[in-house]
Image 1 (cartoon, rainbow, N blue to C red):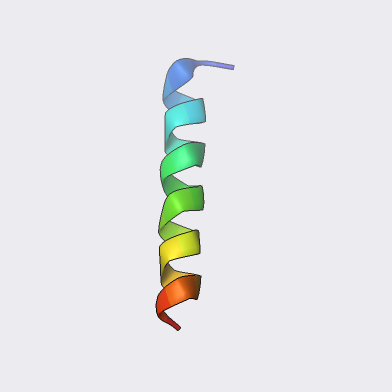
Image 2 (cartoon, rainbow, N blue to C red):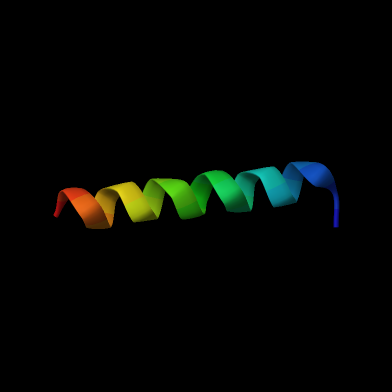
Length: 23
């Protein structure tokens, strides 16, 4: 998989984790 897709996946995972922590 391209590094871009991996990067986007990591960013999405971090964003979701932060949102879940805030909620």
